[in-house]
Image 1 (cartoon, rainbow, N blue to C red):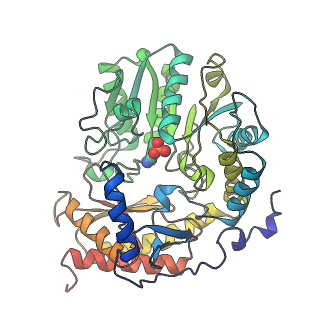
Image 2 (spheres, rainbow, N blue to C red; image 1 turned 90 degrees about the vertical axis):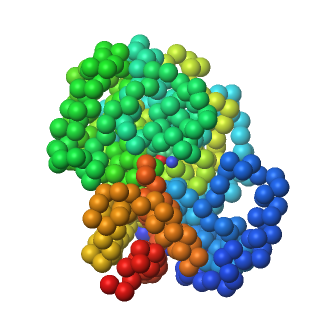
Length: 461
Ligand code: PMP
């Protein structure tokens, strides 16, 4: 049963007995982590890599505690997943109750209410007040694949257009849609056909300043000339480029693309897998630009850490697919649905969008102050609790990926988990759990700033 709104306090968000502090009690990694790493080397595929060199024992709120007892400040949320915090008590209880009732029947075999309730929540929360339908799947990539299937079936067209710097996943179709070769695509072809790439809006790296509308016209002219608008089933767009570098497009870019899609019968798909669920300070990032997508893909933050993803969209598009055309054994697993309902209750009633805006205020002020001291910081950008700095060689726009890597490693050594991203690998990104204590976040930002200054050799300036 959902708690009443007055009782959705920190007890529903932060696990009991988990001090919200940074504390290093051994070297990083400590002996217990090193022992697991040695076992891992013998059995885990080398193609799977990890950012932190330690192994996790507990996590919650804004911290991750390793098997040696080191407590790290979590500025990653498992790549934007644990927006409600890790092991959020309300989510953990919902998971335990559902697991005790039943763990799986397959919605395609013996359906259950949780799946329907998640689709109701998605219909209510996603942008637009038109009639909507959803299908639930297991991963972000699977959601993107299904959005393409639906758009193709509904339009009878085959081409799919994506943006430069895009990331949409690692399956065969989504590898084709993802821009970056290494490590995502190199050696894994041939890729799916009928995928076309057009320029994004990347304000820092435009040769000359252009408006969002001009950047959209550049993209749609290329589609007209090279693909033909009447061949295009879908234009798939991240409202803020995620893995590509936390690039916020120029104002008006998304709206102009969406208008062009409407004019040409192209399905506008917003991939909100990383930006969704209050991360940017609103429930969905499209809302910042007043854009209503035809289809929206969600995953990551939706279920507080359980694997769940969805495609939600206009009823007439979604229902163009024949019965049995969508689905999968685990899609909308009942435990994942129970977790999602608990997580969504927290997003809505524990003011986590407001929390994202407070994180933005603190992060932007600290990162801007850093940028004034470190000429390597070319830009501070993002929305809400999705903030980044792009690192370059001073006085140029030449990306400095090595510096970003050194900073991330120094942070890890000092008990702060920070991720890199970007086509050029030179962006440090912050994705803290929305429930992080602001004091803990401030401490993490101080460690990050010191690491940037030290690694840039700028500390004495
Ligand atoms: N789209 C976007 C925008 C993403 O950020 C990601 C994951 N980083 C994906 C798709 C793929 O999601 P998953 O890893 O769950 O397949």
